[in-house]
Image 1 (cartoon, rainbow, N blue to C red):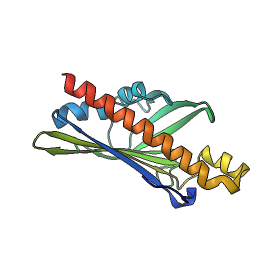
Image 2: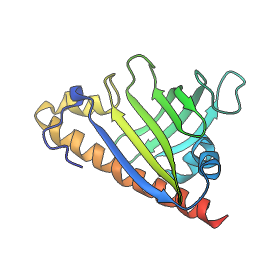
Image 3: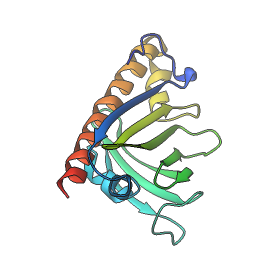
Image 4: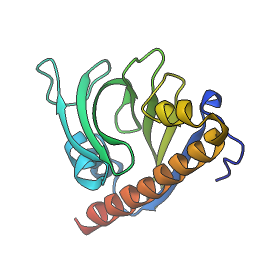
Length: 169
């Protein structure tokens, strides 16, 4: 991926994909379970559905508690903005109309399993990253680049772990 020169206002994205030799239903069970996703993440510490919901559905909300060595600890509310089992699960962080980030898993069945893609977009709404950018506007492109690289590495680990779990059963 190449993000050189990307600014936060560009709403830059990152995407990674992996082939998994398992059924779409098995892979879907993993990616549609936000507790599994939190267990795979170094940054996302815990999640909890809101409003009496116990599984994803369009419009459902969940709280996420995160921690990062440079950014500290924070809590966000996410909204399920795309839910099409077993193909797409996406959520927007904070404001679904102007999210601070959007995350999406997409599954595409092929003859030998599933192509699983994880995608993320920064912005267009403000996030904790904007605090660093506000303090060092001359370093915005580097700040965005570093954060997207962190996302990319974390997403690669997520997908690799999902592959191991899905193919082991």
